Length: 430
Ligand SMILES: O=C(O)C1=C[C@@H](OP(=O)(O)O)[C@@H](O)[C@H](O)C1
Ligand SMILES: C=C(OP(=O)(O)O)C(=O)O
Image (cartoon, rainbow, N blue to C red; front, side, top):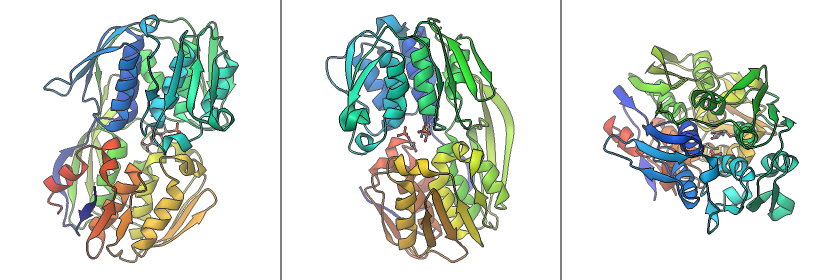
């Protein structure tokens, strides 16, 4: 599917974005490991989370819904009730599905094979399988075990103290989930703090874990108890609207019910430093996660430098941050973001290529990019490279450009933001 967007007027009113992808994945996984019914309100029906549901169903987990309110219920019977899948588990395009399920499968006494689409089969998996092998799981795969399809023979794990070389919530979560199913204690220490949804939700489901600086520790063998999970709107989806409304003169938009977990809200800090007019209000907590309504008004943006510990707090927002940089005055420099090269696409290369087609002065750095903004963009024929965030970033750039922009192969927006075009249309975008 191609998506064509035309230059847009101001974005005004109040909207919501679909449920948080990271929290939706974790709610179905912890719901499957727990005992009892976990009702997930505002579950994200995006392709990635549906991949997680499909894999769990293949292990015998029962679900009901989504009901008329959009709530999905997981009928959990504890980890021991999960069964050997009869066929290859297909994680689709979803790194979170593959890596977190690897942690669970490593802890279960049966054989399984995990695979995914062409993009996922290119992404590095040894970062997860190495610590799981240290815990006692037998895992193999293509490329000397680095690439899916991966075969797993799990069970009889022992806890480890793991120091992760990458700041990755997927690595941390996989080891913690395996640790929950292992004998003894497991700890994970990360170089820089990554999103902590797993820790928060484990605690919310009754597990005891301690967080000491960059180290999370838990004892194996703990049982989880089902809990209702109200999923907040995804700040990574809201980011596209925050940037669009900041750039389109006259905009005054409120995005209601957005997750503002401090390990995820780096985009608010950076847009604020760029001069954006963004106010989170009505702050509250739901199921252990901070939530707010976010008001954004158009403002003149200026370039910034971004790097260091901020990067994991906005890693998925960098494609749309590059768009903000292309329209801001002065230079925007993004560093310490080499992880972008191993996402659904190489997001440094793909954003440089696509914004370049629209006339942006943008270049790759070894671990990021630099964009000199302040010049209007022109509509172009862009390619999503099969990457949902690249597709939506190009669409946002197109809203501000002269002439129409077509994003080829844009069906992938459904991976994380089903209804993206509908929300834009409801805001008057053609
Ligand atoms: O744990 C998660 O839900 C995620 C963690 C991040 O990946 P890494 O763990 O590879 O940094 C992020 O990019 C991804 O979209 C979702
Ligand atoms: C990188 C992403 O997801 P995942 O790693 O789960 O494929 C993303 O949603 O931008």
